[in-house]
Image 1 (cartoon, rainbow, N blue to C red):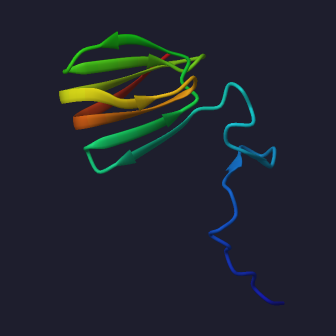
Image 2 (tube, one colour):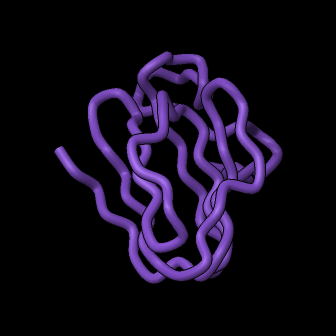
Length: 93
Protein backbone atom coordinates (compact mmCIF):
# COMPACT_ATOMS: atom_id res chain seq x y z
CA UNK A 1 0.00 0.00 0.00
CA UNK A 2 1.41 3.41 -0.98
CA UNK A 3 1.27 6.37 1.35
CA UNK A 4 -0.20 9.54 -0.08
CA UNK A 5 1.78 12.75 0.18
CA UNK A 6 0.16 15.62 2.04
CA UNK A 7 -0.61 18.33 -0.47
CA UNK A 8 -0.08 21.66 1.34
CA UNK A 9 -1.53 23.58 -1.63
CA UNK A 10 -5.05 22.23 -1.00
CA UNK A 11 -7.38 24.58 0.89
CA UNK A 12 -8.07 23.73 4.51
CA UNK A 13 -11.48 22.21 5.05
CA UNK A 14 -14.18 23.31 7.45
CA UNK A 15 -15.03 20.59 9.95
CA UNK A 16 -15.99 17.29 8.40
CA UNK A 17 -18.13 18.84 5.70
CA UNK A 18 -15.38 19.19 3.11
CA UNK A 19 -16.02 22.92 2.68
CA UNK A 20 -13.33 25.62 2.66
CA UNK A 21 -13.38 28.26 5.43
CA UNK A 22 -15.59 31.21 4.57
CA UNK A 23 -18.21 29.17 2.70
CA UNK A 24 -20.24 28.58 5.85
CA UNK A 25 -21.54 31.98 6.99
CA UNK A 26 -21.05 31.30 10.71
CA UNK A 27 -17.48 29.99 10.37
CA UNK A 28 -14.63 31.97 11.91
CA UNK A 29 -10.97 31.65 11.01
CA UNK A 30 -8.31 33.34 13.15
CA UNK A 31 -4.59 33.38 12.34
CA UNK A 32 -2.12 34.78 14.84
CA UNK A 33 1.34 35.72 13.60
CA UNK A 34 3.72 35.91 16.56
CA UNK A 35 2.26 38.29 19.14
CA UNK A 36 2.09 41.24 16.73
CA UNK A 37 -0.73 40.45 14.28
CA UNK A 38 -4.09 38.65 14.19
CA UNK A 39 -6.07 38.06 11.01
CA UNK A 40 -9.75 37.39 11.58
CA UNK A 41 -12.10 36.15 8.85
CA UNK A 42 -15.77 35.82 9.75
CA UNK A 43 -16.24 38.73 12.16
CA UNK A 44 -19.62 40.40 12.38
CA UNK A 45 -18.77 43.61 14.24
CA UNK A 46 -16.63 45.51 16.73
CA UNK A 47 -17.93 45.59 20.32
CA UNK A 48 -15.05 47.44 22.01
CA UNK A 49 -12.08 49.27 20.55
CA UNK A 50 -9.22 50.94 22.39
CA UNK A 51 -5.43 50.54 22.44
CA UNK A 52 -5.59 47.94 25.26
CA UNK A 53 -8.56 45.80 24.15
CA UNK A 54 -10.38 45.00 20.93
CA UNK A 55 -13.51 42.85 21.24
CA UNK A 56 -15.18 41.52 18.13
CA UNK A 57 -18.35 39.56 17.59
CA UNK A 58 -18.15 36.43 15.49
CA UNK A 59 -21.81 35.47 15.67
CA UNK A 60 -21.92 32.76 18.32
CA UNK A 61 -19.02 34.04 20.42
CA UNK A 62 -16.99 37.12 21.28
CA UNK A 63 -13.22 37.21 20.83
CA UNK A 64 -11.23 39.71 22.92
CA UNK A 65 -7.66 40.67 22.01
CA UNK A 66 -5.79 42.33 24.88
CA UNK A 67 -2.39 43.99 24.88
CA UNK A 68 -0.66 47.33 24.17
CA UNK A 69 -0.90 49.66 21.20
CA UNK A 70 -3.62 47.60 19.51
CA UNK A 71 -5.25 48.93 16.37
CA UNK A 72 -7.17 47.66 13.37
CA UNK A 73 -4.92 48.03 10.34
CA UNK A 74 -7.58 47.15 7.78
CA UNK A 75 -11.16 45.94 7.79
CA UNK A 76 -13.82 44.72 5.37
CA UNK A 77 -17.39 43.46 5.83
CA UNK A 78 -16.35 40.21 7.53
CA UNK A 79 -12.59 40.34 8.07
CA UNK A 80 -9.97 42.48 9.80
CA UNK A 81 -6.31 42.65 10.74
CA UNK A 82 -5.38 43.62 14.29
CA UNK A 83 -1.84 44.79 15.00
CA UNK A 84 0.07 45.77 18.12
CA UNK A 85 1.49 43.84 21.07
CA UNK A 86 -1.06 41.05 21.71
CA UNK A 87 -0.69 39.62 25.22
CA UNK A 88 -3.85 37.48 25.33
CA UNK A 89 -6.80 36.22 23.31
CA UNK A 90 -10.03 35.37 25.12
CA UNK A 91 -13.01 33.46 23.75
CA UNK A 92 -16.33 34.29 25.42
CA UNK A 93 -19.58 32.27 25.16
